[in-house]
Length: 172
Image 1 (cartoon, rainbow, N blue to C red):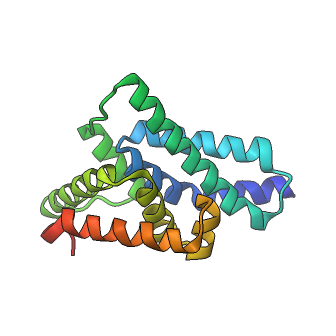
Image 2 (image 1 turned 60 degrees about the vertical axis):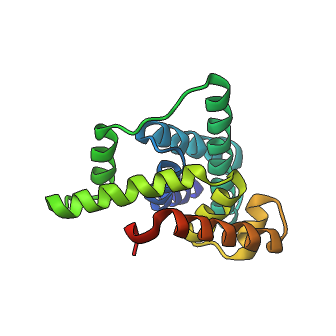
């Protein structure tokens, strides 16, 4: 019974987790790996927890996987480059196939957002992704980030300012 509930939880959060990971790392394959690793860790280590505990645990695991990914990239000196294949996979995951002009605008916006997110300091990026994309409130985000609510508000506000400045007229 609990196994079924855990499967339903993972299915319900798969797309959103992929979106967060994809925006953070800018690469579809890496994002899929990160989400899969986070799901496996949740199942292995926390399946005995209550259903209420799964969501914060899962997103904390995912965030840790993303942070680990960046640490590995720094040590390897790799530069992540988005490919056309990644953009096509993103469209497929989103479940939409917009027309050419709409797709071009979307591609430009997503590329600009990815670059702007990559430029953010890690804590600001984390606060933005948890608050804006995950929809967590300040208290939940503070728990996930391991800091005070005031710090979350500061990081989130600075992230929004930086993103607005970087994106300018590209984003409505």
